[in-house]
Amino acid sequence: QVQLVESGGGLVQAGGSLRLSCAASGRTFGSAAMGWFRQAPGKEREFVAGINWSKSRTYYTNSVKGRFTISKDNAKSTVWLQMNSLKPEDTAVYYCAASQRGNELGPYDLWGQGTQVTVSS
Image (cartoon, rainbow, N blue to C red; front, side, top):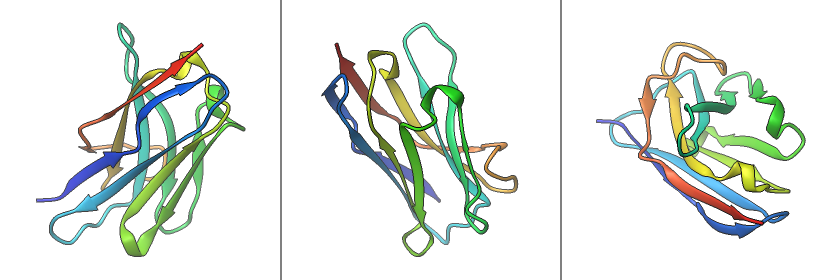
């Protein structure tokens, strides 16, 4: 069974940086794209960024453009989310996800367990 394992969350001051990692483990992993979502308390889950495995096309939600960068290593089945200039409103649980038959825009159908990111003001 394929699993997505996130790491790299934590507590950081506003203006700081964090790098999230997501590694696919288990039997042979194949998907079309990977992405990052986040969910803040009392809010709906939000699509943050996505990347296409083969064509490297990317997507970012407007609120993170210019601050977050999604990247990948196909050989390692690993995706990263580099988050710079963090703001308190970026505080959320961040989830890694895989789109098995779609593209960087989804649909996403395999999920990690989530990692907490807290940005203090």
